[in-house]
Amino acid sequence: MHDSDPALVDDFRAAMRRVASTVNVISICVDGEPMGITATAMSSLSVDPPSLLVCINRAAAMHAPMEDVTHFTVNVLHRDQAGIAQMFADREKHALRFASGWEVCTTNPPRLADAQAALTCRRIDHHRFGTHSIFIGVVESIAIRDEVAPLVYLDGDYGGVS
Image 1 (cartoon, rainbow, N blue to C red):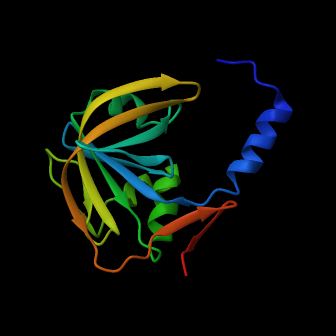
Image 2 (cartoon, rainbow, N blue to C red; image 1 turned 30 degrees about the horizontal axis):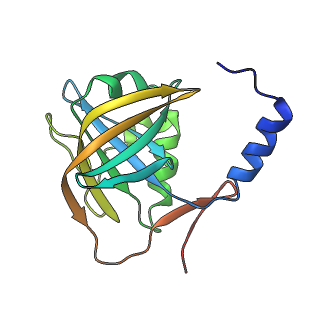
């Protein structure tokens, strides 16, 4: 870990609250059980091959299993899915997470049926940095919702793009 200046850390947090981010649920399947986490740190990495990176906090329950899975799905949330984002961010609602609206099987990562987009990736690499790890995946399948209206997170609140 680094011994960062506390004032710089506070200013960094304040600056990041001013960056609008698309909200995603990253999902995996571990020993036949679905797992997921709300994340805004996702980005396209390359078009050739189509690939993404996602960043997961090393303190998150999903971090260790994510290091070992072969596949993960990035479920890009639609603006009407703030409740899903909140559910996957709340550890107390763990049992409700995959109760409805999900395509769940025992071998593939769960896919949110009406997500803005769902991209299933083969995890090929990961790198630890600071409090997080960067996971890289090559996209193997994509499902897209017709309407383009992603859920965004800005200044500690969920919203949509007008």
